Amino acid sequence: MGQSGRALITGCSAGLGRAIAVALAREGYDLALTELDAASLKDTLAEPEIKKRKAVAIALDLRSQDSIKAAFERATKDLGEIDLLVNNAGRALLKPMVDVTDAEWDDVIDTNLKGAFFLSQLFGRACIARNRPGVIVSMASTHGMTGIAGRSVYGISKAGLIQMTRMLAIEWAGHNIRVNAIAPTTVMTESRQQLLSDPNKRASALSRIPSGRFATPEEIAATVVYLASPGAGSVTGVTLPVDGGLTAA
Image 1 (cartoon, rainbow, N blue to C red):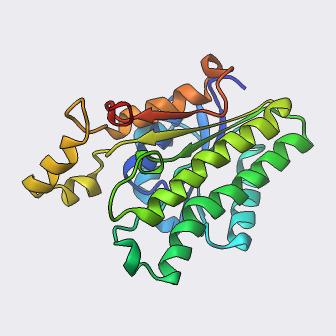
Image 2 (image 1 turned 120 degrees about the vertical axis):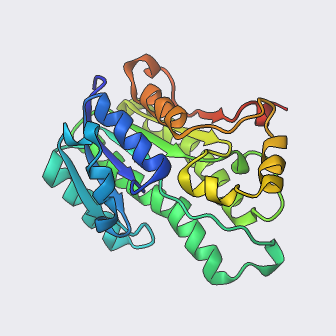
């Protein structure tokens, strides 16, 4: 696989997922774009770079095994064999551990970890059955590598994703399937700009980042492009922090 092919990306309606989709379209990928509500992908499909490629909008609920299977089958039917899977969709939860409910735990873990696992399983099976190389890039988080109050379930889900990356990389190395993850710090998406509109909250978030600035969606998207590229051909099992030095401090 060169720097083109067919990519399936989860969670593409806005922000980071949309930036990843645009960057991969620019590199020559055709795209299977997924979201809980496929209609919410309208603006992503209208991006100029994406309009130059073949792109399909697919409904996907990562909490449902039936939905995962149907989405992967639809992507393969519409585009052909998938070369790159980007596990980007995720649920956040800001809540003290003592107050987390059973339903909230399931919602976050099933979306961020279980759903990513079983979608990756389908991708791996397809690559192995057809003796095709493949690449998986999952969106982890610095919260999966460091501790922070109020993010227990989210951090646990991302730590699981990091370990999944290691395990699948070893298991599938002989099949020429590379598996990596990215651990961003705060990414300044439109929704995050609204959350950090309070100067005190913004200053507090910045105080944890040695570089003194937030990451941009385009920086994270560029990292996805690199990890999918032939230049990263010997890179597998790695979780790459893109965090302004946060995890090095």
